[in-house]
Image (cartoon, rainbow, N blue to C red; front, top):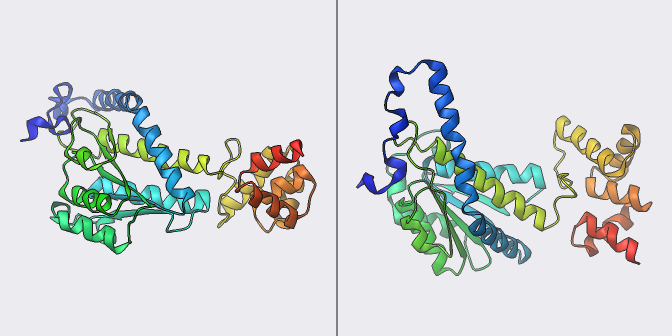
Length: 300
């Protein structure tokens, strides 16, 4: 059966992996990894469609829900968890579900990925519905757990997206939008945490980041909706204000404090010379977009 899946095939470039000089082994891995972005470039139209659907979900108050098993599931949970501090997204806005639950993040839960029923049950637990977008992630493209999840999500009216690393993947037939990144044979046969995992990480980066940009959580290339929850992020917030406003560190720090650690408000207060309350009101009218807030003032 495996001959039908390129991710499970033997890589003819690495047949002597166990006796290669270390430098040659690392150089070969590096060359193989460089093929991943090229493979992703071929499916950018599908990724664009997926982002548009995710944005639609967000605008309706819906969620982005990742579901997967093993490495694929862990990557989904990772991307979801990073959205909270990076974009001040609520824990429910982007969710990651992995076969076997939280324990599976650090320990292999054998057999969990083989149950279609479990995939549907896990989505049922989070009440996946019509305004949500569900992304099923499976390197092979045939994981029963993911198929069950996508099948359930589709029946609930959710938008379904599949992400696989083989062409003609089984999960694609259960998705409204199928993203198939053909990464080919792995350096280490069948170890899809390598090129396939890298491809999945890059695509998930695109899905979440581009979607957040499109709903106003970014100004220029600054993550102005960052949650300044530690010293590093507090300092980053001040630097962002400096960059956006063109002011000194001291001025940025003062505005940051006046805005109650709200970076967006601090920027608007500085550039429009307004109070905190007025900045918040203007931002709300512009649906949280800093640029629209500033441009709106220019056209008044």
